[in-house]
Amino acid sequence: MAREMLRQGGRSARIQEAVHSTVHELLKKMDRSEITVPMIAEKAGVTPSTIYRRWGDLSELLADVAVARMRPIADPEDTGAMASDLETFMVQYAEEMSSKVGRAMMSDVLGSMEGDAAARCCQYTYHHLETLRERAAARGETPFDINGAIDLVVAPIVYHILFQDRDPTPDYCRKLVARFFGR
Image (tube, rainbow, N blue to C red; front, side, top):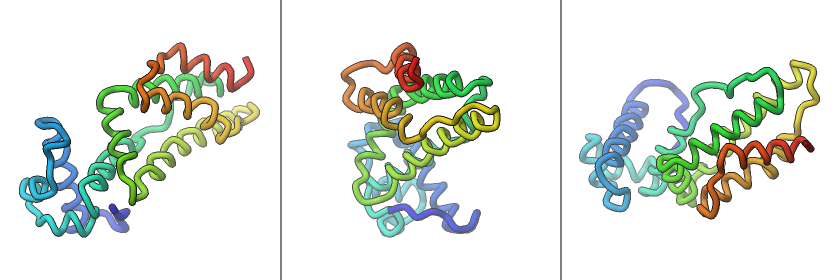
């Protein structure tokens, strides 16, 4: 299970960067079912025991790499209104997560049964929704219920992405947001 870094830089950060970079390189060249811990260790210049000690197993490592890629690098777009902010965010979210890379990352996160990868991934979505909610309040709009947005907007999109029974199109996302706001 991956541990959050308490300090920036240092040996531990260099190991994490080397291992994560190696996993990214290998995933570009081969199927994830062909990748092994010893293969990653050799290419990253660490011992397999270092990987096992830090991540526990391959599924935890893949989940940690996926979560690191999912970490937000910017706040959601500010469109000037709460409903359009949420709509824009959900359309982008559905587009990113339903891509081949997004589906693989979700699979890695959900395949990690022991760590906190899913919880960290979930927190990123909550953080974005909190940002949208705070923006709405600052503009004088009545803030929306975050748990309601998760239940009525995010969850259906994630369901369809995971089970691939329907494409979460931009129109579908817009309809979910409109229904959430009672329009």
